[in-house]
Image (cartoon, rainbow, N blue to C red; front, side):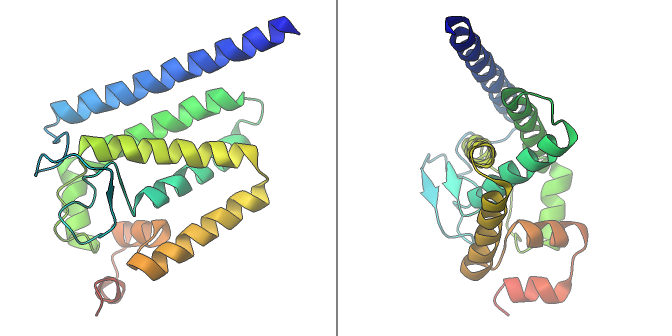
Length: 194
């Protein structure tokens, strides 16, 4: 029994180190790409609730952090489906790697310009490094939640988040993907309040 507890603690320590290293590599990569640590104003902050403000995607968390919780829910279900024998902590490490790769890709000039052209983020100039860390932490929270509850509760949370964001900010993960890949002018006008 003591060996099993030690093994579990070692696995958690290993996972913690792996996640920390992935986040550190992501931070260093973004800084080398020229991303600002705290956004263009240089002011660190915890929360920005206004998706049209200059602080959106610059604070540790913003309304879009909830879409990253949804990433975590989705990553858990996909990795569980495709790798059912893989231990939870290994799937978590893989999910952090996928999320980090997305965050780096999302902050390339190409994707930033695509967001400006096809979504409601007309003045988007990329995420601050602080915001990227917050997005990764939000994904981890969603992943852990999905690992602790049934699929039914994970799906319920996903739907609640999507509906709440749709009502509150006229955007959510689903609309973000649609407008990024298949821009619909009518949808973008509606999102902008037209």
